[in-house]
Length: 223
Image 1 (spheres, rainbow, N blue to C red):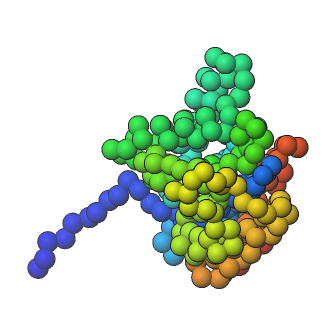
Image 2 (cartoon, one colour):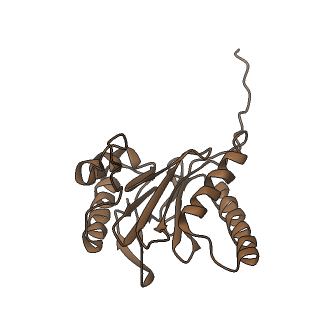
């Protein structure tokens, strides 16, 4: 009889998808609200989007317990920064802090896959995409999570940004107007929820521009 042993993992993958799109004067960050484990839906109304500063928002998929721990750590570091500098952290500064935080835990990583979006110091949209151990890149658009393999080809087709190897360096922001970017995000999630069982129920969209932050919601497939 073969030897049997119980396997335990400190990680789980709760599924879900996140998207961020940067424009000339706005940033759109979106995620679905389904949280699953295996073939079980734990809740249909869980927000994967966290506001880190007035002009900086993070959307995270992966293991939501690690995501929550990461969000608390970033909130504490941001509070310390505000006490020391009497101002909020900029989006590029928060992007570097997130990279450092993830890399610091690289030997027992936060199992979270993040996209960070907001406005930079000039008021232009910016998006940063990450792996689990802090490697990050500034891009015009990105997707993370269980539906990212379906969403990224669609975004590449619609928004393909110029190669970073071209000189002079091209701007990474997308050419779409804000309303067009929101419509595009709604379309990609409607499409992904048809094929990915971990993406669905409801779509939460956060739009950041000079006027502040606003939220929109749209229903997705519930099966």
